[in-house]
Image 1 (cartoon, rainbow, N blue to C red):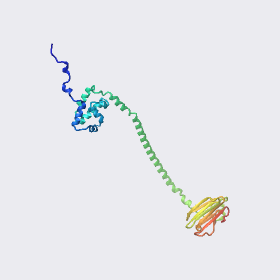
Image 2 (cartoon, one colour):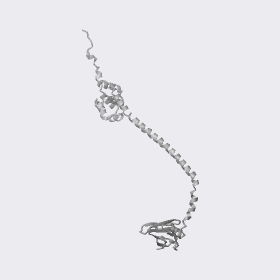
Image 3 (cartoon, rainbow, N blue to C red):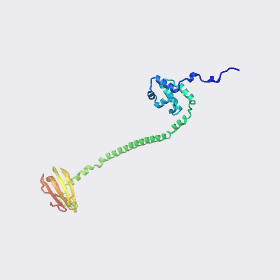
Image 4 (cartoon, rainbow, N blue to C red):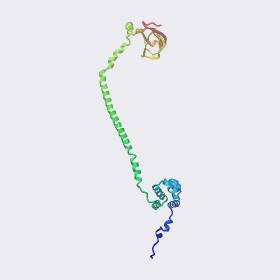
Length: 274
C-alpha cells in the first residue's frame, strides 16, 4: 500500500484563509491613512451608507456586481490600496467576473433612443436658416425697389411744378368784397360766418342756434375760422378790432375797437347785426 497525498492537501493554505476580508482591508487602510468615512465619501462620491456597508462586507447596497466592483476599486485607490487583488477576491467569492454582455443592449437602447430627435432638430435648423436667408433676400430686393421708386418720384417732381400754378389761386380769398357775387357764392339756406385775424390776436367763441359750441379759443394773426349753421351763429369776439368779418359772403364794416369785446348774432340772407 503506497503512501500518497491525502485530498486535504489540496485545500488552500492556512495563511490564505487568514487573509482579512475585503471590507476589513478597506477599513484598516482607511484608518491607517487617517481618513474618516465622510472624507472618503466626499473624495470618491460614494455615499456614506454604501461605504459603511462595503467595510462590513455587505455589498447589497451597491446595486449589483458591476457597481460593487467599481466601488471597491474607487475606495481602494482612495485609501492607498491596490484594487486588483480585492476585485479578484470579490469575483472569486461572488461567482466570477460579471459578464459584460448585458451592457450591450443597454448601450444600444441608449444610443438608439435619441436618433428620432436628430432629424427634427436638423429640419428645424434648416428651416430657420432658409427663413433668415429668404427674409434677407426679400428685404434687399424690397430696398432696391423702394430706391428706384423714390428716384422716379424725384425725377418727375420738377416736371409737375405744382407750386407756381397754385400760388395765383391764393388771392381768391379776399374776393368776397363785392357783395352781390359773394352772396351768390355761399349757400342761401345756411348762415356762413368767416373770421380772419389781421392784427395781433383775438379770442373767439362761436355757437349755433341751439347753443352748441362751434369754437372757443384764440386765433393768431393770419389765422381764420369759418362757421355755418341752418339758422343763426352767435359770436363773442375779444379784441374785436383785430378781426375782419364776413357774413354770408359780405364783409362787415363795423368799427370794432382794438381790445374791445363784441357780442354778435347773424342769420341767413343779407347780414344784419343782432
